[in-house]
Length: 122
Image 1 (cartoon, rainbow, N blue to C red):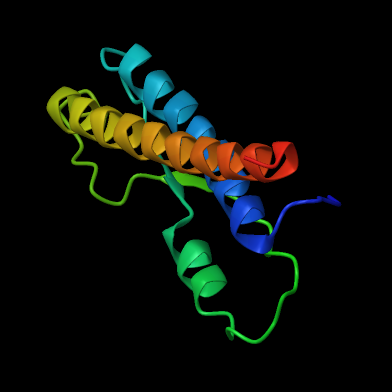
Image 2 (image 1 turned 135 degrees about the vertical axis):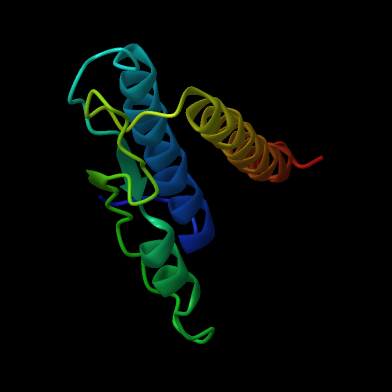
């Protein structure tokens, strides 16, 4: 995806998309908390983010796409009915994800405000 923004803004946008995907997966887990045999899902993008952050500083290349990977939650403990959704853990993950998402949106909005002020000459 071509962008007029710097690599950091592109990375912020990708991370916002990834937190939105994670939110949908966590909501699905919560919706299936009572479904027998349901296996809790998790979104893994932390490794990809670490790789993206490790890019050498002298390279102004476009950021690599952060592709969230949906997988079975490795911390899920199976109940008697085979369901691995722990309501408390899912709620904590949902709150944490919401904080990440809101923080990323605020950072990107601030960067856009700086760009807007520069365009207006303020």
